[in-house]
Image (cartoon, rainbow, N blue to C red; front, side, top):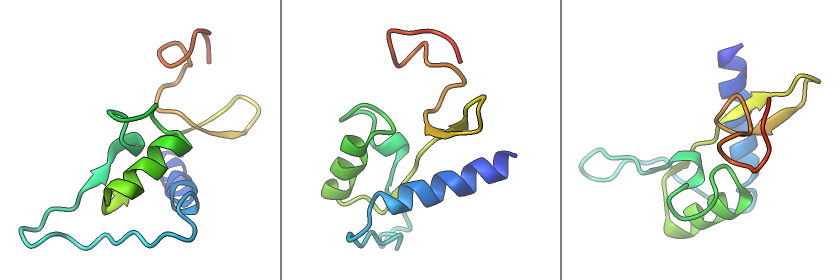
Length: 91
């Protein structure tokens, strides 16, 4: 199940950059710059705004978190609940 979430999350993140080439080639010192949760320091995490901003900044790869809802829908969110990222509560 975890692997499925990681794979689906990777596909979702990749689809957000359609039309943009993002290379995962390490720098000369072997570093790959990744935008964790889309670069949450600059925009709300796991959002289109964050992913687009990360691409503009020239990151090598995007990272997104996914969860399956109770009704089987895939959503981009790190937590098991919406408590931390919204003014609502619950899963």
